[in-house]
Length: 110
Image (cartoon, rainbow, N blue to C red; front, side, top):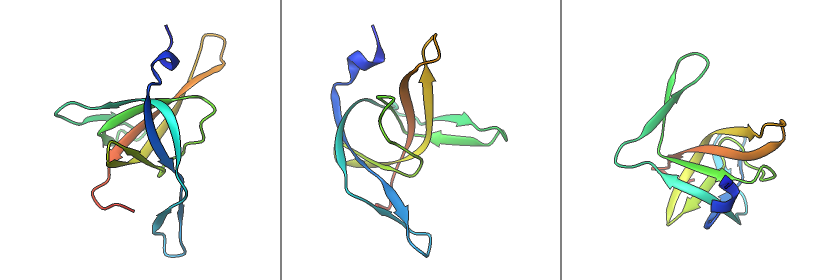
């Protein structure tokens, strides 16, 4: 069974750009099918190459062809999340299998 068999949730994905002052603004959203998992009562974290810990509130798996980048906004069940990291997962033969995005809930919506 593949993670793609579990793409049974819909989210709206908004690309973002930055204006000349560096403030992010949302573009036009598009609905996509994903696997979305909010972390239970506590947030989880990962460490980057410099051992800096980053907390995330949800994880989202999507098709490898999905265009998703850091700072994109995801709307799921009336909550907005900001993409803070995207990993491309590969199968045994090196073929892109899916993307895994780590999300933080947005307190001040864009």
